[in-house]
Amino acid sequence: MGVKPQHKIPTINLSKRNLISGTSSWLSTCDEIRQALEEYGCFLAIYDKVSPQLYESIFGEAKELFDLPTDIKMKNISDKPYFGYIGKHALIPPLHESLGIANSTTLEAAQSFTNLMWPSSRNDHFCETVLSYARRVSELEKMGVAEKYYDSHLGSTTFLLRLFKYRIPEINESDIGCSVHTDKSFLTILHQNEVNGLEIETKDGDWIGFEPLPSSFLVMAGDAFLAWSNGRIYSAPHRVVMSGTKPRYSLGLFSYHDGTIEIPHELIDEQHPLQFRSFDHYGLLNYFSTAPNAESTAKAYCGFSYLNPQRLLYLSGILTNNFLAPTMVANFLKTQITINRVKIFVNANPNILNVFPNTRIIIEIVGLKDPRSSRSYLYHTLVLGGACPMPLIIDEDEPLE
Ligand SMILES: O=C(O)CCC(=O)C(=O)O
Ligand SMILES: [Fe+2]
Image (cartoon, rainbow, N blue to C red; front, side):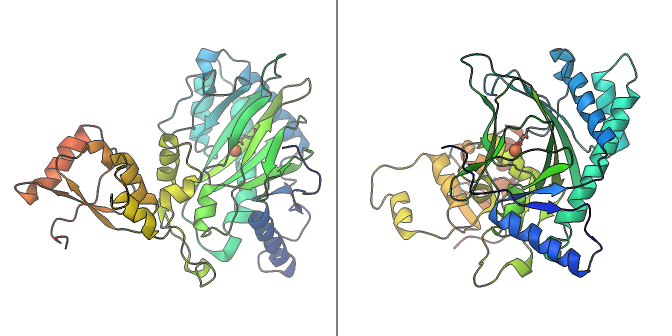
């Protein structure tokens, strides 16, 4: 599938317009943004708050950072998946290397990352540059998109700044710098040096690229935005394909929301019935790290779809003798039908519960002599035994029919 010219990523000028909330030009900009995100899942923002000097500095600093020894870069670790150093790993395209600064708009985070990378010498210039860059780009996120879009209030946001380097492929080496994926963020803002390579998949399966400019930022919706918008926003699959003779450096500011994300009531109507339950953003990210091949992470993690009676008959063994593996049954219950409680026999494989954390599905353990002990059974066998990383909601007072 080649890159076709007929589709074009929309460009929206956010530097010159009158962006004062409530004015007619502001309202028409909001509308352009909404249309672009619904149709393409992204747009190119022309934004002038990152000066040419800051552009030169941040890409100069990125080069110095990637020139550090690998064992130093590998110190960039995190308790969150995909927040730390990625590279030099059998499952990662060999051209790719990246590092992450969580909470990058705070001085503490910029300082501690700088001290980790340059432990024996101060590098104030790096620290000041990334902090100024992250703060300015986060203004673009707040100003243009998340807060004003659909005029709904969102919880508190933190910004992960990732720095990427893609080296030139060697002869007979794959040119893939980053495999096809959708982002798990709410929004991602990508910026890069003059070497292009980022390609976006349209809804009808065409791949499109664009010419990068120092003042253009690709604003892209992630899976959390897709779910929050009740499926109205497109979360575009994208990839990086390398060509040419120069390495590619890019920067991505990924926004994440703390706390539960609720689907706004105004986005639910007859034409748009509720498709997603409220969800925990980091739960979605953790889920992706355990199920990276789901066709849609958002749908698998927090989507509703309605019961298909034929599948239920298969599942229950009425139409077949081929019973599904317990984890497949559990996954089916969680992702394919709308339920709020399940019964599990006490001697069931505890791994079956691995798919339930972070849902509001009530689990009743049956087959216990004393039902009162189910809470401690769960706690000791599953939580302490490591099968279940998150607390479960157990409702012992209300017996199942
Ligand atoms: O390097 C880029 O431009 C894109 C990177 C990317 O898509 C990602 O890390 O999610
Ligand atoms: Fe991405």
